[in-house]
Image (cartoon, rainbow, N blue to C red; front, side):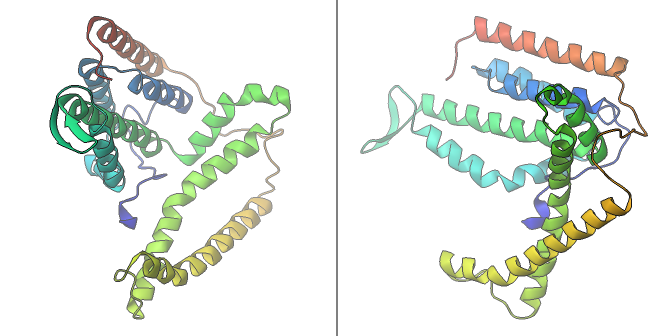
Length: 270
């Protein structure tokens, strides 16, 4: 399970999405998230799903990576679907006391599940196709207006990116520690919930020690390179919007228009 977590992983490539301006990718990600939650029937949801599928194919990232990102939240999707299934209106198909399942509830469960899946897929596409350096620069550029309020934008962007970048590293470290403890005879799978939590103690202590050691090494490396924050710093690579970014913005606008038309002309599901 630990190895299936893909949060924060960057996969180098030369696909269309890789070549986009990271600022545009972040803005379009926010736009797609808003569009996903602005769908109110299956047709408009299908429009967003087709757009997300096109983005996935254009990203040139192996499909198995996207399936891995969904595998981690599969349990959450199932629980959410079951909960929404009991909130439908109309004639019940099955009823036990106050619990009842209707066709409306089934439609609602499917609808919400697809929404969550699309949300995870489009979010994963950003981290898969954007390097930590580009992500830092993009976040800093987008937050630049906040400097008027004396907010240290560069430091915030750097902390966010470092935290995201070290997620795969810490997960890999956790997997190694768990394998080492199992090789020494530790039992982490049998017993109840309380016993499993206690069994994680030999994993958490070395993990915290390793995390603090990595943080110290990173701080020393940045200090040795005379890092002093964002004031007066130059960049080896400047961000510039290209024709490809304009095409992607126009594509997203067309998707938005399609969603609005479908929501107006068709009956809402939720």
